[in-house]
Structure formats: C-alpha cells, structure tokens
Length: 196
Image (cartoon, rainbow, N blue to C red; front, side):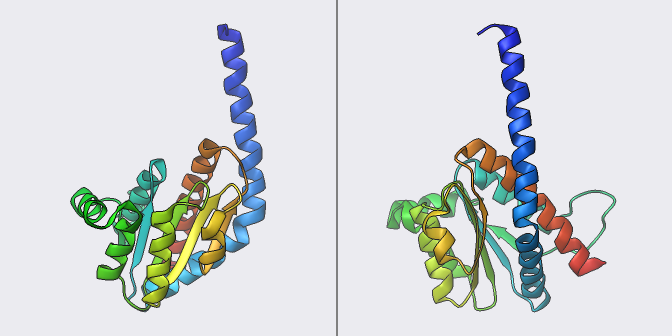
C-alpha cells in the first residue's frame, strides 16, 4: 500500500465515522437525554454512579468517572459528583479476579459497595462480557438501577439492563469512538440537569 492509498484509507475511515456519528445521534439522542435524567435523579437523591467496562472502554469509564468527580473544563466550576470506576483499582480488581474468577470481579465490588438507589453503568462493544453481565445481575439484586452502553447487537446486556443505548455497528473501534462521544455528551447533559 502506497502513501496515497493510506491517505485514502484514513479519509474513508473519517467519512465512515462521521456517518455513524450522525446516525447514532439521531437514533440515541432521546435515550441519552432520558439516561441523563435518571442519573440526575440518582445523584439528587444521594445515590452514586458506578461504572464498569473492559479494555479500551475501561479507560473511557475511568474518564467518565473523572469528569463527574472533577469537571469537564476549567470554565465549569461545580460540585463534585459521586462516581466510581470499578475498573480503576487494580488491587481490588485483580484480587477479586484471582479469588473468584474474572467473571466475578465487578459483581464482587457491586456487592460490597452498591446499595439501593445507586446506578451501575456498564460499557461493552458487544454486550457479551461475562463480568459485566454478572455485575448487572448483582446490581439488580441490590435494587440498583442498571444501564448499559453497548455495540454490535447488544448481546445479553441489552436485554438485562434496565436502560440501554445501542450503537449498532460491527466495528469495535467505531463503537468505542461513539461511546466516548456519548459519555462526553452525557456529562454535558448531567451538568445542565444539575447545575443550570
């Protein structure tokens, strides 16, 4: 592949990404606004937001927790919002995985930290991650609200979560890009709900 072909490849990927962004915003905007309302309600009644994901999406979940706890920009000075990324504590995550198996690593944390009225938001490119499915099941047992941001066909998480946003695309990279966009939009909505 020569440089010109590589340039065309990059431009095509950008075009494909732009088309997906438009489709996602049209299909999911209403559900994202509703999710923001639910999360605002949880925070407003003293609940906490728990986040869990794997791989690249774990980084996005941690980034979402940071934006909720800190803020999204210097121009927005507001109180900290209660958010915990369950994938962020490597000692807890690896100990739970070692003692109970990785499929229980998040559920164990939900069991220990979650309470009625809290919210668990999981992110997955396909909705089939056993550790996220078990975390949602544990959240339901604790009478927490469960939400999922998923890609592809949504897998088991699409059916199991109380609320779900689906990015119906086969590419994990495109799904990750859209979920990052959606988390930024979600924080903007939450800030407007809670601090407008």
